[in-house]
Length: 134
Image 1 (cartoon, rainbow, N blue to C red):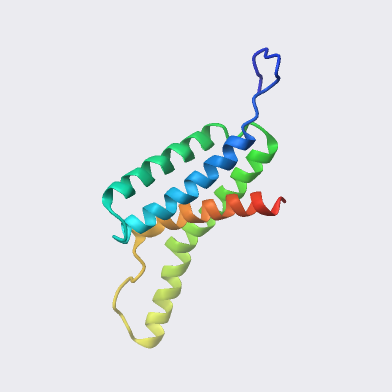
Image 2: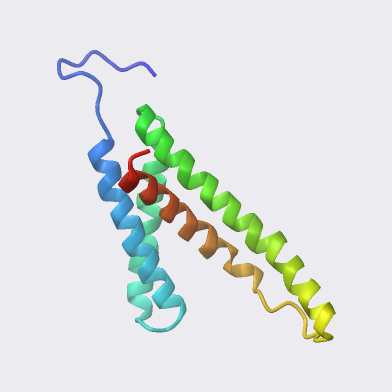
């Protein structure tokens, strides 16, 4: 990545990513609470807005240095793994268990929660790598 001539050197986004990861985590918690009707709709809208803005800004600057790229990679891998587990592995296991027990009530895992699971796993993976430092 080439940077324009700046007497202070290339811009570091490290501190901003740390703050935005906290903003995204808090907004995710508010979004989950709003989905469960534990807080008002206005708080849910604010949480979603701040969460989307922080994730978008983190995405656009994810390759600014190697450390941030590794944080983003850890979060993306965790989010992808969690989404695939929620959409493929868990319904298979649930269907297998329902077949063994004779309980054929249909799918109990709602597919629309996969986005919550993926975003939550992304934030856990991102922040866990940030906290653990490897």
